[in-house]
Amino acid sequence: MKNIVVMVSGGGTNLQALIDAQERGDIKNGKIVEVISSKPDVYAIERANKAGIDTFVIPRKNYPDRKSYSLALLDELSRLNADLIVLAGFMVILDECVTRSYPYKIINVHPALIPSFCGEGFYGLKVHEAALAYGVKVSGATVHFVNEKADAGAIILQGAVAVENDDTPETLQRRIMENVEWKLLPKAVSLFCEDRITIRDGKAYVDV
Image (spheres, rainbow, N blue to C red):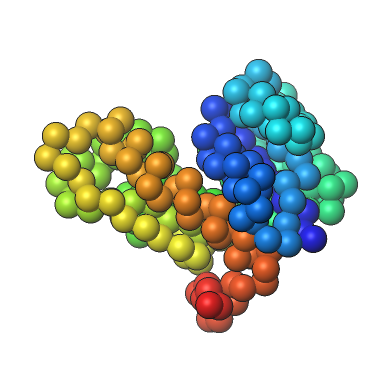
């Protein structure tokens, strides 16, 4: 049974999708052992508490730089014997000391079809604003491993939705969350815990 640690910074909708999947038994051979938040008093913590999952707050504002904050995270991850780290709306860029300590063991979900609309500066509604400004006809979400570059790790799963003529960033965001993010993130977590993801030449392959 693999130890899953989920890291959050806000409301925790993707965390809730993971909690719901765990309660349904959809996550095989893994268990969420703790939720780490970069901010106190966010709703994600309440979601974890309601599910009986331990929480731990490491406030980003208490640390002078990315490196010192990342080292504090490493201490907690080591204490938990983390096998998989899931970034679920975690709004902090990790120092490479974390990604190098957990190669191909950190998963993130990005609300676009990488390599489009990704990288530093593309987060939240900004992603959907950019997609609509470009006039794309489909958009979606990508579950990928995290490496030293923002949104550049090996892609695990992707899913798409149609973009409607009257979409706003908010309506597109909601459609992608409901139809892609909340389904693919738990699926990718279970695939990892079942040892069904293989890395070859820097690419991720799902064993079916």
